[in-house]
Length: 253
Ligand SMILES: Nc1ncnc2c1ncn2[C@@H]1O[C@H](COP(=O)(O)OP(=O)(O)OP(=O)(O)O)[C@@H](O)[C@H]1O
Ligand SMILES: [Mg+2]
Image (cartoon, rainbow, N blue to C red; front, side):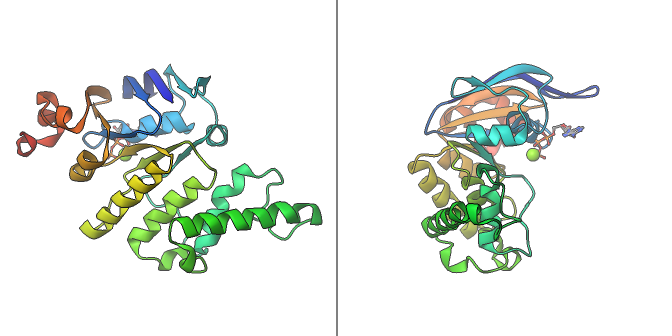
């Protein structure tokens, strides 16, 4: 589904991502782990059009997407969330999801929800689709709540739902469990499993190692910008380099 080939991202003299290659197959849950500053988010940004790769090539479903702009990458079918919450806190749950649809709609509404009559049908359809999505992810009853008033776990879930609004094939989640308590993390895990089972391929950055190990089909480990290991949870947690760089001895079998 996605091939990154020898992707590097440099900031001045700093090589944040150093010739990283990665292959994501359809329907998998693929995780990227590694210490702080390893280059995980920068790698995400290179895929999603926020940082241009300094070198390398990225193809998605056979098409070259290297260096495309953010909205172009989104239109190709790649959705993403960010490490820090980026909801519009004083807007409702529904309005936040509508913003997610924005880049998908020809007449460019949302800020213009009650515009020209010619837009009315498209808008009505959009509202309907938005409601369907919210029902599917069990946020329908809270659709009129301000995003800020949701419990933290549901705010993070709403970010994911907003990224799902454009109907992506690949969804990239940057530390979705950050700041969550164990029960919120467990719910998130079930939610990711559910949307994956419904046909979304997932690329996930996460520091909650327990969650990653039980969720991911494939794990790629970055350290100092380079890929140091890749494989199943069992393979990765017994890898000396990974234990040394990130996991520590407690994960040794
Ligand atoms: N826009 C930028 N300009 C300069 N340096 C940057 C920029 N973005 C990231 N870096 C640097 O690149 C390196 C990789 O950072 P990145 O945020 O990708 O790490 P990460 O693996 O996501 O870490 P964390 O687990 O803490 O989120 C770090 O040294 C960081 O300081
Ligand atoms: Mg990061």
